[in-house]
Amino acid sequence: TRCVPVESCGCQYDGFYYDAGESFWTGGCSQRCECHAPNDLRCSALSCTPEQQCSIRDGQLGCYDAMSTCTVWGDPHYITFDGAVAHFQGTCSYIIAESTNHGTNETQFQVIATNNHRGNNRVSFVSAVDIYLSNHPESVYIRIGPNKRVTVNYLSLLR
Image (cartoon, rainbow, N blue to C red):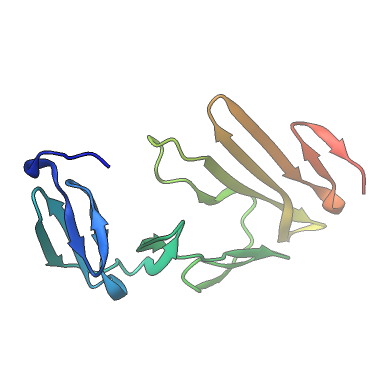
């Protein structure tokens, strides 16, 4: 052990030590606390946004984006992330989901469904799903095409 100046000391809370400048959530994500040296802990009432859930990840309690699913199938039927249902016969390519944080180091993604007519002009179906993943400098392109044929970076995968 070595001594540090008092002004560099952190804070103690609920049996844990926090460095000066470190912030953390308390039980149930009902308040956010920040340690100001020396031993000056400042907490304020906060909560997770509706899109987040309070959970522990990598040993840290916090507000994290909740998992959600959207579904696209058939001629075509859509169930959105919030549970809304849509049925329509459009024949374009539609962005189903994509990254919103384009300036971060996180992996970026985009999912596009392409609808085409099926036999007549009154009915369409999902003919392909394209998935783009990138985390500079690497990227991957995945296509699920007719008959569920999968290609990765334009190379066919055998089923």
